[in-house]
Length: 440
Image 1 (cartoon, one colour):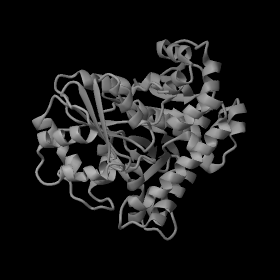
Image 2 (image 1 turned 135 degrees about the horizontal axis):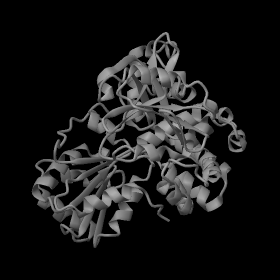
Image 3 (image 1 turned 45 degrees about the vertical axis):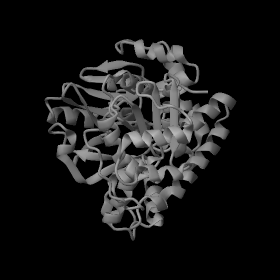
């Protein structure tokens, strides 16, 4: 059973374009890339799927000169299926196993631009970086390939996947200026989503069995497989160092991190390299400190500080062994946010609603010596908007006011909490389940 994804619309638009560059579908392993492509393939007369982990004998097609017409003929013979531009979808999966196939995408575009070609791979980012274990140099087809970034399920995707379309539609249509009558229902669904997480296999299990225990077993299987991949990341960085950096990230989610003092016995170089490798794999998202004085926010980053997010709340809660019963039964923010899980999920939602053609990046703001920190800073209408994830009730919101005072171009701030939709002067309140409302 295929569960509809937001990326389906993006893939559909690509299919219908008269000129369509080959696609590189990028994202963390097991986030649903292959399923999305197979779903798209139902709109084509023919579908060819090369999986280089299974079809190693096809490596030879991409050796020597890139004669696309000759490659097509050989693929037709191998799969006993006609490949016709406009009628066939060619999918090259696990393309990192044959790096020259990445270079070949350029020639698919130049010599057969009408053919629909998509490529993906679980460890593709390390081949693109040129520093993976294979250390093969790639002539990357700059300007002739389009990348689309894919992530685990967002909350609204989860609602639709679990047959809560009415709730999803109601949330989408709500104007954000009045109380939401479905607030308590959405809070309840949000709590469950935190535990199930956004990985397709876990969501499919929850749909099938309704068992959170079974979902947690799937989380353990997934993370075990990911850890087994650490020795494939980079030959000059030992897998045990990557594992230590990953463990640190898991147990220090959303806490300010200084690379030089994060892990005893591991240098800042190895720590930062480990974080970068985990980022490339899609397992960890660094949230970089920024003064937020200019756009883009990356142009005024503070290099020494960052916070770290794990890629999925369900896996995070399972790996950390946090009490999910307390989370599900909680009716106050502090109990629900143990381990900073709500703050982390807010950041993940921001990432998931980023333009799929752009690799996401997150930033936060703090003022040294003033005990002032804003969890996230986003760009809306060419303006920096501060986002705080806080408990219910007005509170002092000192950090928010401090940010707005020192950044006069930011006309308002956003507060994410268990509250219903509300406004406090220049602070707009969004419930924890409604991140999509201010990201879209």
